[in-house]
Length: 69
Image 1 (tube, rainbow, N blue to C red):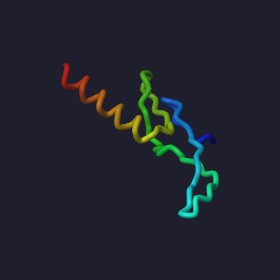
Image 2 (cartoon, rainbow, N blue to C red; image 1 turned 90 degrees about the horizontal axis):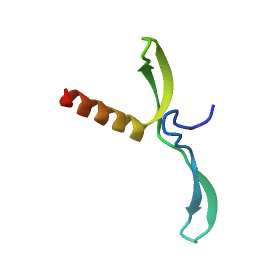
Image 3 (cartoon, helix red, strand yellow; image 1 turned 45 degrees about the vertical axis):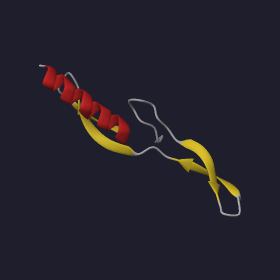
């Protein structure tokens, strides 16, 4: 399974670990993925992997929509 957000498509980034001696070794920065259940429009639920930042944005948008009503 890919370490990728199912909604935004965020994936791993590549960079370097840098030591005090300025030695550089490759490293991967993985997204903070959470497994959540999402209810679809037909009433069924599906488990998807979502980045934590995306989950935070989804909750914010839902709160704004609820307060607008």
